[in-house]
Structures are given as C-alpha cells and as structure tokens.
Length: 426
Image 1 (cartoon, rainbow, N blue to C red):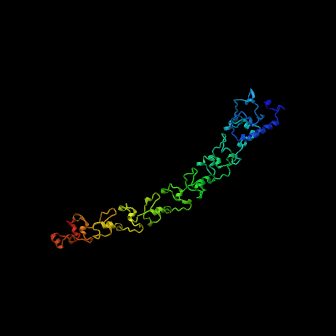
Image 2: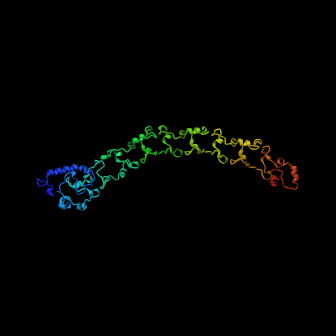
C-alpha cells in the first residue's frame, strides 16, 4: 500500500498531503453529516468527490480484511466485519450499511465522537433548541422524525383533527432549519384569513376574529359547534343559521325572550292581543301548533276537550272569562224544549254533565213505572216545588183515599208514604 499512498518524493506520508486530505474531508463533512448514513455508495467504498482517502495508520495490520490480494485498489466483494464482536459497539439500522470511512477517518479518534452521542457525528439542525437527545424524534433507521404526534401532545397545541396532516412548516416557518421557537398556539395566528373570509356570519363585522375555539373544533371549519347551553338549540330552534336570530351581526346581549324573535307570530295569532308576551306559558320549542295552556282552573275534559280556544273565547277575551255554563251555552239553553217557557234555572250542571247534553237530573222522586215520563208532564209550569201524590198529580182527596183504604190499617195520606205501597205509582 505504501508505494501507492506515500509521498514519492520522501517515501513516507507527507504532512502537506495529510493537511489537504483533512481540509477536503472537513469541507465535505457538513453535507455528509446532514445526510443519511446509508447511501448508494457501498460501505466498503468511497466517493471520490468527497476528497482523497484518509491515511491507514490506525487501521488493522491485516490488509486482507478489506483488500483483494490481486490488487490493492480492489476491495473484497465479500467484505464483512463483525463490528459488535470486534469493537463492542453494535451497528444498527442505517449505521449497519454506512461506509466505514464515514466514522473512521482523520477527523479524530472515533471513540471521542461516539462519546458525544448523536451530536458527535451528526450536525444538529435544531441548533440545540430541542436539546441534545435526538432519540425522542429520530431513530437509527432514518432521520425522518417519528412520534411527533405523541411528542406534540405535551405542548400547548396537541395535534388532533385537521392539525394531524398539516406540514410542520405550516405553523413553524423556521421548521426547514430546525427553528420551532415562539410559535403561538392561538387559532387566529394561523387562521386569520379563514376568519376574514367567513361570511355566514360575517366574522369581521361581528367581531369574531378571535377565540375560534368557542365555535369551531380542530376537526373542521364547517358545522361550528358553539356551546349554546344558555339557550338550548332544540326543536324548532335547531338547524338555523346563526344570523337567523343574531341579525345585524349582534351576538353579545341577544335577548333570549321568545317575543323578541316571534313578534310577527304573536301578532298574527287570533286572540293573542289579550295574552301576555310570555309565549312559553302556552307554547313549547317544538311547534307553534302545540299550545298547551294550564287550564286546571276549568278542566278541559269531556265535551270541553275538543273545541279550539276561539270557540269559547269568541271575543278574544281570555283573562276573566266566566266559567259558568250559561255564559257559553245560552244558545243551547234557548234551543232546548221548554227551557225558556218553563223558566228552567241557568245552573245547567243541575241536569247536564260535561260529557254530553243528555240530562241526568238526580230526581228524589223515583221515576219508574208510570212516572217514567217527560219532565214537562209534571212540571208543566216549570216549577220545582214539592209535590204530593194526591191533589197535585193525582186528583184524589183525603176522603177519596180514606174511602179506598177502608179496612187498611197503618196507611198515611202524606207523600212519600204512599210510595210504601205504590212504588211505581200504580
């Protein structure tokens, strides 16, 4: 080897030659160290563009480990060296295929560089801003970072949703040269253009250029998920654009009173002029047609359960309307047979129920047998005075009764004693 590598003028290594080799290697070191360890150049070779080969003074004495016996300019095709067995240092990942001369050169003892860790051989592109430990982001397989999502989870902005696929330099302009310092975590820092372009609602006019997370999530700009818990958006209030209620871009201080949005509905509803503007007293958020006023003061059961409000509140009067039957049923009273001519009382409930108009009067006098007849047969004058069997309905006198009951003991001429023997009036 000496006849090919030594200075022919002196027959030994030239100091000048060594300086040239060191200078060439140092010039090539920066791009070399920033690249991958494994390249297209085999590990038992050297790229001439990187400068001359380095001296072999510290190499093993057994030249046949590397060189082919037929020529010193040839490296053995089956070159193999058990690095872990021979040196105690295992070459893993990309280091296994790295050229020997990448580490074993005239820059200095390899042990010195190995003791410095990754930074001993690899120039730190992050300029020590991320610490000296490369392993949290890099491995011996490749310089391509790994575990960035997990690492970023410990920062002020975990990478979820749409941030997962964003390139680093989209948020870190200095990422190309390893500068990640001072990047703000506020949404508007990166999304000011998105906010300025939003038109429904107009974010600029409405002053919505900050606190994006109040409405949006990292999973998408569409379908803003503002927490509207103070006024739940359910029923008829769901599915509407914000500006439907927040007209003119007014968000802060918008009234939650129903009437503030539903004045037109109130004005167009029959009879509502007499109602209060507390819509929730009768309506719910699901439909205007499902009004349910608390009518417990006058239960809407039986025949009263079907009519609309206007059938009773014909004049639009709601508060103070009389609950008396006659107040609503004057026409029914007037059309009933003999109710007017016989001067029936206006207390309809004495004979009628709310189920229907069929009279169901509680009659102390049994209406059975011959007595099962129309009211007017007995009450031909409309009177409800006390009746007696004789002299009122039956044209008997006390003498007649005494004559007919001769020999009958214990009878009485008074009502209702007669019913004791004549329960059906016969």
